[in-house]
Length: 90
Image 1 (cartoon, one colour):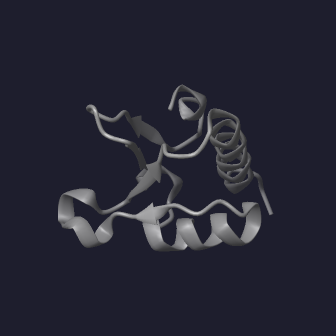
Image 2: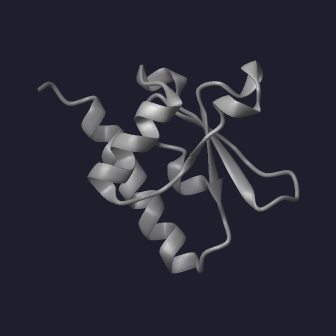
């Protein structure tokens, strides 16, 4: 989760003993479903939009921590690259 701390427009919500990190992506200007779909298409990283968990979870993504550490680091790098690309002028 510390790898995503520098993602522009995002805030990491670390797990409280669970195996998921929440990523608040509301600052990116994208909705959770759009963000997740574009992340999957562009960087091949799958995350779960949390909008279905109720209004307080809207604009958040759930990231599972069940993969090996090297794979999680690679996914974090890809997420960071994706988010930084959102802030570049077209």
